[in-house]
Image 1 (cartoon, rainbow, N blue to C red):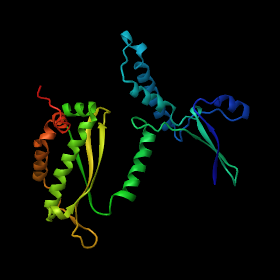
Image 2: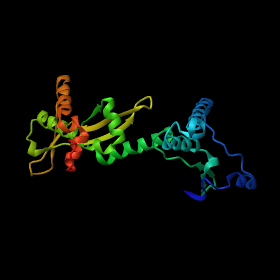
Image 3: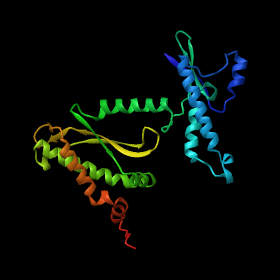
Image 4: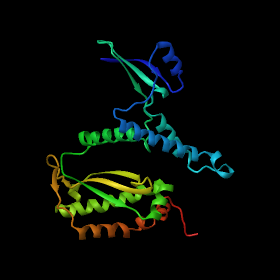
Length: 264
């Protein structure tokens, strides 16, 4: 059994503690030389980005990157480094001690914290949310002007997502051959806001049950799997989504729901 016996926050005098206790010099190490070189290159790149984003590095004091981007880089540079804070663990039985460095727990850049959060989310969805039925992934991208619009106004993305879910759910009910009043499906949508090159690319990854549950009021709902969609059916679904008034003009549709008028 492990007990947390010492906590050093980021502002603790760790180096003086190490000198008094005779502990070895604190530094981040990797198990392989390749991993060390890769992290060193990444840290050097992050420091260069952070330095270039400083207001002092731009004429007139104008920063090159938003502050939240710089904060992501700065937090990553301290993630997993013992000198920036750690927990000291000690086993009550064998008296073995271990130092565990603090993580940045950020969402934007750190691959370690991102992978940990991704694994935890996937395990939770599989164990507690998604039923043991076939699931299909639906991916929807947007034109570049809409990506910029959704990035500036995230609230406009919710009604568009509702339209997409309604169109797909109606299609699955028709494919399963059951009545709409007796059928229901489910979906989980993850909004990804960047592409493989870390560029702005807002797109949707939807995990949709590949069928519908039929409820008749007698007993538990029964799952009916839908046939796989053809290319022609996918193109027709996309046409329905594009042709929907709220999907064509999200800002105007949002204002109509709020009782506002954009005609003037």
